[in-house]
Length: 374
Image: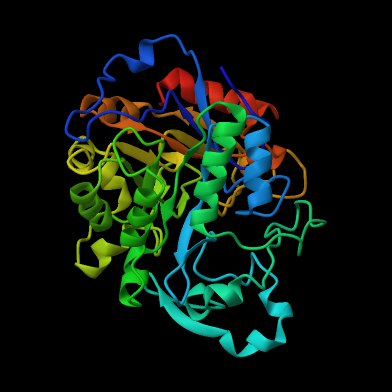
């Protein structure tokens, strides 16, 4: 088994590529097989050490052993795919330090929420390349802020392929289409450009080391008609109930936004039911839920008003004040309809680890492996 103390990693165990789109892999006995190797994904690169979504971060992740790198895709004004966690970049770049771009600060409606920010779609690639990445979380190392430029998706593909040759092992990519409906409304759809780039680099086929993920559903349905690469349905949630561990649904993390646009009222949670998973299996190969669908977090202690108590006395209320209960039904039901199950996101800071793990991030991995995660 491969484990990695890289803060901010997403993991996949025995992830696959190469199954024909119309012939789902036989994974009915997967969870009972001895674990030979777990596939480690560098979520946003190596964000525990370097700013998110930078070539330096992806390179570091590869150097320390990840199998897959995960870029989030947004579009520039001139239709170039660049890698940022969100379409707005005020928290992840030094754009606010560029007076020439002060007039780009604006409000846009993003998944139904009016959001203020500097949006990538208002910048050309040439302008984006004048910016530098910064670490968005203040508790993480800030000393690398301003050093690294914003990469294009094409540059990430080139990195994965060059490092695959250098290390004589396959480095896969796991791109996420960010806010598909938002970009389509701007006339900057991500999906076609994504497929064009995969085709250009020989990775638009069933055997390609590529996973395309999205929180929306219609774009995955459309992609299923256009490509044979592995497709991943992401499942979000707003929070979890501290008393029961049940996922709470609140906009914009309540449902796929394309459902909101078509007046479908189901929540993301529907896609964890047997019926919902069967629906996902008609257009995707993998379901990738927020880990709280699988590991329910219940507060160790709540006060008379129902507020979570800082039970470990570290001065903050965090995951460290919760205990975990397994909920394997989603994995079992997904496997029953031929879906693999991935989960996100595994982090190793102590305040992000539940009481069960006693500060040992490896135990969270092992628990999910034992539950049959793929």
